[in-house]
Image (cartoon, rainbow, N blue to C red; front, side, top):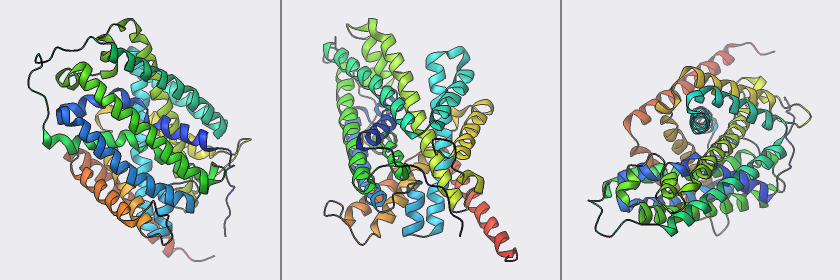
Length: 418
């Protein structure tokens, strides 16, 4: 039987929580409130609550499984162990392909914030630099994540202060509120993806100290912090900007400062948005690389991707391959117009997480089976509310992956045994 070099356990609760929270406070926190308000209006707050509830169910399932299977790969590993090879493959393939596109979009968003006229070259440079950081070891990744997260949190505090100081729109001045009750679920779908960063903690299971204790604590702590921040910002922005202005804003947190007595601090918000993009991109590259590593170990992706090497024992080939794929997307594709399909992939990923957790025989009192069932149903409910183009695009990618694996398995069966 082939053996693989293992990654090193170097992350504690604080570092793991920072990586998860850094993923959830990425570029999304600077833009997601506008489209969600356009869909649901003032009821956008209900969307945040729904997204948070489904995310909590998924986080509990992820924590259960990560404690039982503390290896790189996240739900790809859990699906294989609890449900079989095919569900695990679907989860892993959806995560790797969808999040690779998300990496490209995140890098391009950073480029637009920093140098709009040279967005693509700056995005490529960001991917190269962050990949180099990852290759220096997971502790360097965690250190940079903490620095970027600190910048983002400071920015959000500044935005909150600006919003509280006002001035605020006069009562009765606003026209009819945008959105409707029918937009609550689609808006919840948008908000859910802002919460999905805790998956990055599970994908790092092989690099966490005392994983049975550390992973559940880090996942739930990161989600709780993100939920409080998103709910607080939702209430503040609706009050400070009004639903009409919020729904029409391309940069709601920046507008919250522009339309306040602290507008001179607008460049600080732009810097915070850039840091958020980098933090989320760093965590995404790390998570996708570890999932590709796990899939390669099981021969669901090319075997060289399973190679661990270097002085810092990192998945060198997987990390470089992810970076190359992201750069290729940046150079050849207008990523922001096609990345929507990754949302469907994330929901499929978490539906497998909940299904796998449902089959666990041993479970703590805080993780009843009904919660796994609720998470599974919630993921599917949000998935069917996504735009048809997003569903069709990701379904095609999943179908291509399934067909490719089926053909590879057929060819392997025909090969003579050594």
